Structures are given as structure tokens and as C-alpha cells.
Amino acid sequence: MSAEMTFDAVAEARPGPKWRQRWELSWPAYRAWFEARGGHHGPDRATCEAALAQHMPELVPVHRRLTMLAGGDDLAARFLSTWCPPSYLGGCSVAAFARDGAGHLVRNYDLSPDLNEGLLLRTEWTGTPVMGMTEFLWGLSDGINGHGLSVALAFGGTHETGEGFGICTILRYVLETCRTVTEARAVLERVPSHMDYNLVLADAAGATASVEMHAGGGCTARSPAIATNHQLSAPLPDKAAFTRTVERRGCLSRLLAGSDPVETTVRAFLEPPLHQTNYAAGFGTLFTAAYATGQREMRLLWQNGEMRQRLDEFSEETRTVRFADTAATSVPTESGQPAYADLLRHVPERNRDAARDWLDSAERGRVDWVAFGQLFAA
Image (cartoon, rainbow, N blue to C red):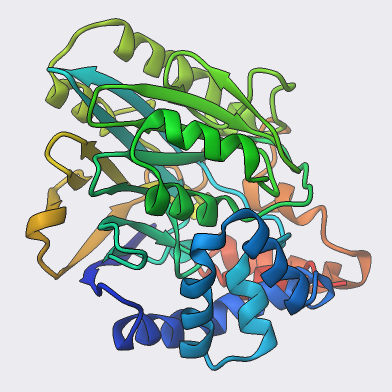
């Protein structure tokens, strides 16, 4: 099996027609997911907006503007707030290190090509230049700001949820308001995350950090500045063998224990075990992002090319990447069953027939993730 994905680099200083175009492109799928996962039963608009004003007041004008561009309805406002959203998962390996007095951050983003927006967005929404890979249309999975602060996330490995924000919005907030790792850690201590996530940070002075965010609030600092898909204070997740999270963390530890040139470390992310190829099961590396904080620069890397951008020399471009799946049917879960079948055992009983039909289609290479989300609707 093979798949392809289009990556767009877009610059828009203030939310406007370019952002609205992305909203119109992505909202139908996001809305189906949001409604299928119980979004209608979540906090109302007033509660969501009050939470944003309490915890991240600098983002209130941005949220208001985005909601207006999205049509102004309550569902859009609630979705964009990301306050107590439905749960969502992901993969990822991240490491940060210092070379020549400045910080570097490298991450792999591991997921299905159908579940990533492929948008590298440069903005100045609160006055600070920020560029990064978007999630939920305005949040970030990784990025860098004009002060040279960089941050990236990795799923924490548990299904625990609590009262808090989607992690991607928290990353956006960190880059909009913070200059250093120290400032960012203070924000992470007070802004609650709705799920367990692992964050890695680096700044232009060479400071680095790894922080475990806990569902409902609170965080724990870890060392070294690496992250994969489990937290050191929790039992290993059910799919630890499937995601190779322990093996990947060991690889990252070895990388940071040495003093290899920056490019040698970056290139290690393009090789196993950090680089994943099981796209059919929703766990393939979609891109490697390498951030150089001193230069306010990032690169998106793939096996056969790269896209390079600087905050002060950003150029819009589009690149289509084709992924080859070398493990579409051969990588088992810990139970020995296909990964899709393991996920679908959690489907409500009344949707089991539809789930079996979905599984048959998926095993033939036709993966409809919107239909997948609807299988779990109550």
C-alpha cells in the first residue's frame, strides 16, 4: 500500500481569507469527528469562552476572530476553544539538545496521512511571529517563534481525560506569549491539558526541557529532553510494542548521550526505529521537523526531500509527498490481532456490523476515518 499527502506552507499575519479557506476545506471532516465523539454534549459556548479567558486571555481576540471567520455559530466556537474536547491520539518522537550555544529540536510526527492537515502556517496573531504545523486549524503540534523558542508534542500513551484544553492550543499559547523555556514551563504548570501529553522545548539560549502534561492539570519535568509515547510515572500503554515507544525512547537517549553533529542527529530521525512506515495501520511518519532556534529556522524532511523555512524569509509553497507502506499487514498489536481489529473492539454493540464492514474495507486499503469516528457515536 502507498499513500500521498500534500503539504502547504502558508503565511497570513492576521486571520483572514487564507485561514477561512482552510476552515472550509477541513471543517466537514472535523465536524463529523467532533459530533461523532460526543462534541454536542460537551461544555456550552459560554463555558468554553470563559475557560479561554481565564487560562489564556491573550488568545481571546484570536479565538473571536477565528470564530467569526468560521461563521460565528456555537459549534464552531466550542470546537475552536478546544476546552474539554473529545479525546484524540497520535504518535511521535521528539528530542531537544544544545549545540554551539543554541537549542535544536527535532521531531517525527507519526499518524495516518488522512489525519493531518499538512499545513505549515506562519502568523503574527498576537504580534509575535510564529510558524509551525497546525492541528485543529489553529493549534500547533510543533513550532517556533520570533524569540527562538521551539516546542513539540508527543501523545502520552494513556486514555485518561480531565478538564482542560486540547494540547495543540496550549502549544499555540506558549509560542504566542513566551520567550524562553523557563517562561514556557511556568505556563505549562498553570494551564490544564485535557489528556496526558509529553512536550519537549528548546530556546535560543540553548536551554531545553521535557515536560509530562497530566490530564486535568499539573505537569512533571523529566530529563533528558526527549519524549515518545509513554510517561515515566504511568504503566506502559497497551500498544507499547506496536508503537515501539520504549525502543524509540532508548534510541533518543543514546542520540543525546553523544555529541554528534546536528545533521547526524537529524538524519537519525529518518531511520528505524524512529522512522515508522506502517501507514495502513495509522502509524507512519508523515514528516520530520527540525528546528534551529538560533536561526529561527525549520526544515520539514522526508526520505526524498525537504522544505526549508525561516521566520524572516518565509515563502509559500506546496509539496506532495508519497509514502510507501512496508508493513501494512505484517505489524501486529500486542494481542497479535490486526491493529484495526483491536481498535474496533471498543465499538458499541449496535454498530458492530458496520464496524466489520469498515474493517473489511480498511484491509483492502480503503480507510474512511470519518466513518471510523461515526462508529463510536452513542
